Length: 129
Ligand SMILES: *[C@@H]1O[C@H](CO)[C@@H](O)[C@H](O)[C@H]1NC(C)=O
Ligand SMILES: *[C@@H]1O[C@H](CO)[C@@H](O)[C@H](O)[C@H]1NC(C)=O
Ligand SMILES: *[C@@H]1O[C@H](CO)[C@@H](O)[C@H](O)[C@H]1NC(C)=O
Image (cartoon, rainbow, N blue to C red):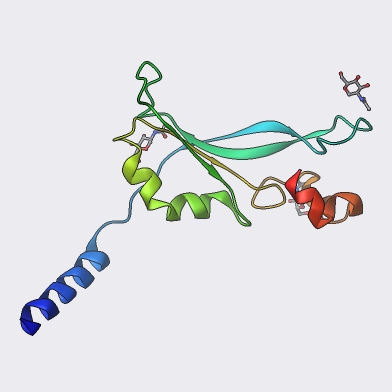
């Protein structure tokens, strides 16, 4: 009994080590997001990056889904690469897969290189805008 448990454990370990990591592929796009949604004093926008894969998406099916991942504090490609379940389930759910990047992370910088110099928008509270 102990031997078979040990064998299963070793097999699982080998499987984890040799199984190829999912090769996630997507198209990289941006959309114009408002720098500030809560003021009338500026209509300025910036390019917010998102990753999209519509290969399994079938809008004619009522059962199709949208898997939308709201980016956390980091480069969105890192989260996409590590969200295996999203990619594993997408074909079965005919899902449109979208990973949106959190502003001020990765390439979604509201003011380019100056993003961390423009004081009013570097307040933590503005991150949720
Ligand atoms: C979606 O992902 C699959 C699996 O990685 C890939 O074959 C396909 O080309 C991707 N589609 C797009 C539009 O990137
Ligand atoms: C922003 O856009 C709105 C709607 O078009 C307009 O009324 C407003 O004057 C604009 N504000 C600025 C600061 O340009
Ligand atoms: C930021 O600065 C680097 C180095 O000076 C430059 O190569 C890059 O193009 C700049 N990016 C933006 C968005 O201004």
